[in-house]
Amino acid sequence: MPDRPTLRQRLRVQWLRARLLARALRSRRDLRLVSARGGRAGRGDILAFAVVRNESERLAHWLDHHRRLGVARFHVVDNGSDDGSAEFLAAQPDVWLWTTQASYRESRFGRDWTNWLLTRYGAGRWCLTLDADELLSFPHDDRAGLHDLVAELDRRRVPALGALMLDLYPRGPLCPDPRPRGEQALRRLEWFDAGNYRCRIMAPMRNRWVQGGVRDRVFFADRPRRAPTLNKLPLVRWRRGFAYVNSTHSALPSRLNDAWDGPGDTRLSGALLHTKFLPTIIEKSRSERRREQHFSDPAAYRHYYDAVIANPDLWHEGARRLAGWESLVAAGIMSAGDWRGPG
Image (tube, rainbow, N blue to C red; front, side, top):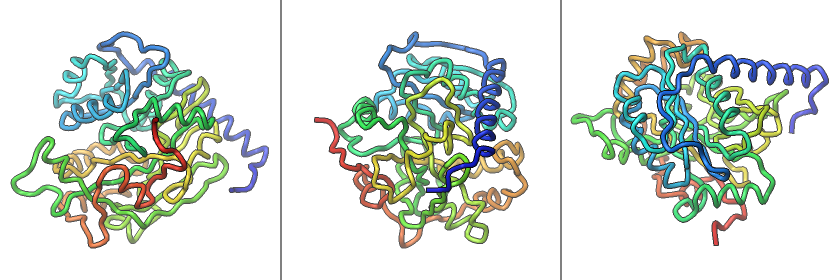
């Protein structure tokens, strides 16, 4: 564990938390509620929150996956989609759709918006905060739902579930010819890296910094400190006064960040199956390189976009095949702890 923070550090963290909450409150002016299908959630319902833009190829699978796990309502912010995403979401029976044309980057990459919605609608509930290219997996999820999982977390008095954002990739070029679509494209994402993860604990918030995986291996081998941060806290029993700091990589109060220490930690944890590397990643990388909305220093990541646009094959001899939650536990990506699932 890091050294106990000084008084000055504690005051700085308190100030940051107050600032984030104030930003979230102001950001509500950016959002317009388009539809609120299904009415308000019940007292024990689990809610999901997301910000999306042009995710029509993923949304049906993403919604169905998390419905199956037990999400009752989805609060989704559409940030200027022009591919039919907003229209699709507005027609869903369990989606509250919000829209905004405000800057994704200036909203701290959507976190101001989700912090506000979590405070307004999620306080007192278990809440799942995701991107549209993330699919939650956890031990025993072939027979256990989110209600089973959160009951176990409540029993342990654990307020959050830690998870690794696990990049999945195909064998062969990212965008083959002919290009697969829909479920066929998703089925190609069956490989992952298992053994190259590292974790640091950062003062003064005690947030974890996990790096590694395929993007570290292929795109950032010569600059590992710029490799993506992979640890997340996607599932939290939300309280007023909570706030995500950097995506869902870290949160305040600081005790939330103690939920997980990354791959190899034997405590109950999960994984976010990251479906980033669909064939459309090539054209999306061209678009995002122009928009410069996804990094605080976009110029520093131009080489990354260029490398993705080159349509590489990410597979290597050490790749592991995804075969349900058991394969993730066996690889040390996540842990069941001593939880044996429901029943």
